[in-house]
Amino acid sequence: MTLAPPRPALDPADLAAATRDVRRAGSLTFLIGDAVLTYRAQDGDVLESDQPDGDAAVRLTPQSWSDLLTQVRTPIGLLLAGELAFERGGFDQLAAWDRTLRLLHNGTPPFDPDRADLKGRDPRAAMTLDDSDEDLREQLQTMGYLLVKGVFSAQEMSLANAEVDRLAAAAAPGDNESWFVDTDEGQQLCRLVYATRRSAVLQFLEQDPRIRRLGTLTDPTLKPAPDRMEGTAVLLKVPGRTRGLSNIPWHQDCGMGGHAIFCPSVSMGIQLTGSSPETGNLLMVPGSHGQTLHHQWDKRADIPVVEVNTEPGDVTVHIQDVMHASPQPTAQGGRRTMYVTHYPGTLWDSIGPGEAYNDLIRNRTAEVGALA
Image 1 (cartoon, rainbow, N blue to C red):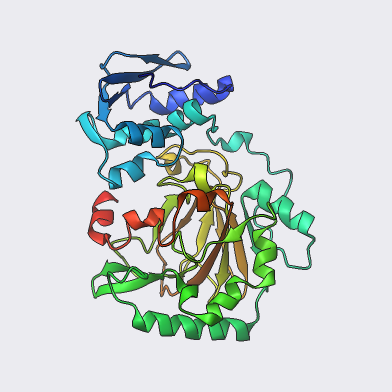
Image 2: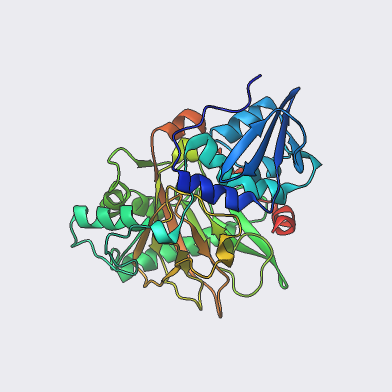
């Protein structure tokens, strides 16, 4: 069995950056049945051997290995699924190798702010629907995200919030239609999923021509998936310290897997309440889409971060593999954002009704908290 796939053509600078990533992590061995593959960084390159002598050694099934190679699942996705067994070392060493493996297997380059080309555009620019599709598209494709002001009226947002109130009142832990997090006062609702299947008002927004326009800027064939991938979801930011996934750390939306299946999909965030640091806003790394970041990249002081503050009725748009975060509110919390995602047709070939990558973490607050 041949484990190592043929390497794509690689930029030597990318390969050198990848070896710097893993120098401290040491070498890594994969054990798949009787087959062995060890990766070792040396002199700006990554060497491969069939000797099981890596500083860390992880055993996984042939299917799990195939999923890792093809970016169907990532190391964190395989860990949450219970499909990794470490004979030496642990998950931190595998995570340190993640972006190096994606470069070797798929040619996905590492992000470097010094090489990011923002084309002279402003990463904090606010645009409107009066801007041309060409200008909106250029901003989105350059930054990986877009802020569009005043898309919906106050009345439209008031009606939507009333529907969210209704759905929130009916939500219960474990109902597979919501996420809850632990707080000092008990469990609190932090997300509604498949929301448009239970609300005609929210479904109207999901299908609105304004959302359709923004969701197809990069590809006219993209479309929403109301019955899979958690459909259209509503984020409700819980104030204070929480245990679970209300305050989502730095991530790419394909972070558990699926990059080969649904990227580059586009997610629209309809701002039902507006957002700020006090209520819990969105943070973005401009120009980071289509690339990978080191798993401890946020410890670097030179990474550019943009805060996206909004008013009710604004819409944020982001390409799903841009690096972004939703940090803890600094005060009262309460941000509400309705996320409508448009996917490529390949999604329907692999993900069935009611299925989602987030099935691994929904209703598993304790496990997610322990992992964090």
